[in-house]
Image 1 (tube, one colour):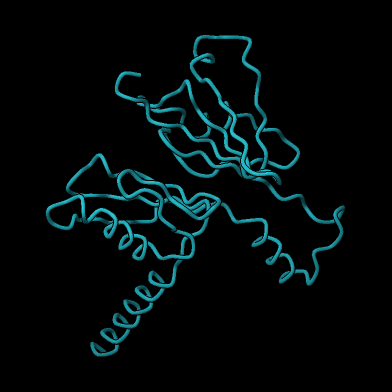
Image 2 (cartoon, one colour):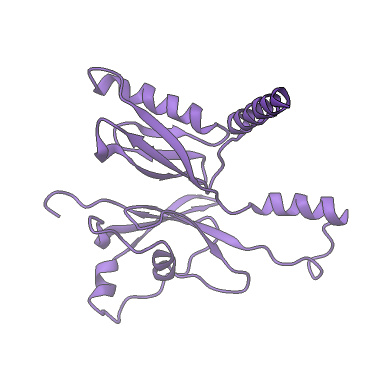
Amino acid sequence: MRILFAALACFLSFTGVAAAQSFTLKPGDVISVTVLEDENLSRNALVQPDGLISLPLAGTILAEGRTPEEVQQAILSRLASDFITPPTVTVALQSLGPESADDEAEERIEEDGTLGTETEADPLPGQVYVIGVVGRPGAVLIEPGRRLTVLQALALAGGPGVFAASKRIQIRRLTETGEEVFLFNYHDVEDGDRAVEPLVLVDGDVIVVPERGLFE
């Protein structure tokens, strides 16, 4: 009996390790990056639509299609030259991003054998991404048939943080001709400025809330 339990424990341990190693990141996922030697480098990072994450000192790193362990090694490699001895870096999955439209379409094909017509299929939600100095960086869903403004998305993301540069929030949008960047001044909203026009987001928009400068 003891041998049986020991064998079962080994099997579960092996399958758990294998599952962890096979898990790969995708846009919308949020990972927690911890640098033991410098807490200023520790933060949550969103996997952006282009598959990249952005970190201080380390810069932009490809995360899509990689396991958290592979991203951890990539960050360590980037930071090694900035420390006398290699820093202690850990990467953990913080939250999963919403299922993409393609995934939902594939599931519908598997279940029904067909996608059906537009009138038969349920409309799929869109999503925008909020990154930077906010309470909960990550993906925010746009419910079918409803509008989502920048202010609403920021509220769902926990709002700008204490050290956010709220006067120069960016909305980055990919179009057929390239990337467009819109600026949003959250400070005007706090002051009750009625002249602020609500900016309606579209699927794939990225809201960037930067950190304010020392004398800003």
